[in-house]
Length: 416
Ligand SMILES: Cc1ncc(COP(=O)(O)O)c(C=O)c1O
Image (cartoon, rainbow, N blue to C red; front, side, top):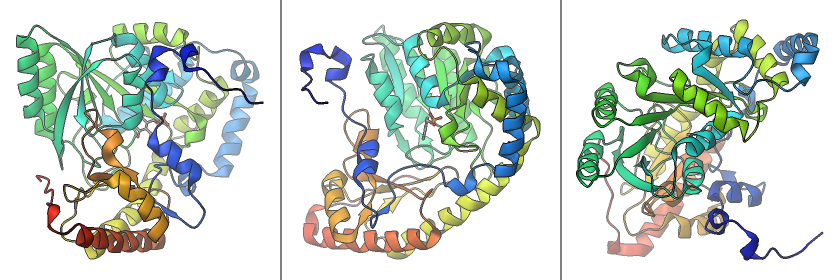
């Protein structure tokens, strides 16, 4: 069935909405292209089938609960297990009343936006930040305070300066959205002093911090404590997901925060998904209860750390000296800076055609439309050998491009 859709029927929000470049890319890539584009988990990290069978058995023994509507905040037994998991993993003591189960952390972002944003509300985001968070926030037409980053993530001093100006002009901030541990796309881990500084600013200026933490369990080095666990953590709305430590197809995540926020989140969620699928909740609850997710996390880290190292080595060997990048201590991504003057979006189509390698141009991750010379390379899906081959081809391609561009390009060096 086909019929043209007249734009006049669309809401104002949708008329302005552009497609997420990552989703577009994934849909047209051919088999023979090496893709560093998507950030999907490696299926080798998914739970063991034997464990699944047992967990599904458990869900089926709770037949009615599994197939009936559940409460909007999530099954009490599952929320209890999530609170226990957070205590084990990050030594933070929360009760089930602090937790809402979500349909992936993408739903948490949607609900947070519904709860806090109006047209012209102020939100602070890193430059760059997670593209699909911007997509969700943009629906509400907020104004952004854009915070520069370096290889360690958000420049909190720069945020402080911008806040001083905002508040002296009579404005106020609703929240800072940040991905402190294993940033997407930056790959950075925010050091402890910056975390403390950010919390101190939240207290001084009275705003919330949304701590998005899908990659905080996938670390390759020691990382500082999560924001929610530090002094002032009652200003933090923490969101995470079972997508990277269990399976993204299960569409389960959670939000943790002060009870008052949780109550409002539940109200906002009543108008969206009603509840996350109870069957899925019971299955993951069983995994948590048996600590199978905890034990799988070490295996997952091992799988990705081999790939991360393969990409790190290949980048050092094959990337031209005028290219800089962030080597991640957590997460899936190498964020890469081409010399200024080059446009990663324009070059993408040539890279796919000439060397059969795909990446995500960084531009979409910048709320202010900058970042044209940046790109994100994801190592989560390809094998280590494919990673080496892909980086080699990309290195040769960029070398050629830089040679062609001659003296008009200037290296962008990121601060350590
Ligand atoms: C920073 C960040 N936030 C949120 C999500 C959404 O994840 P999900 O909805 O699968 O939990 C992702 C997915 O990659 C992400 O990278």
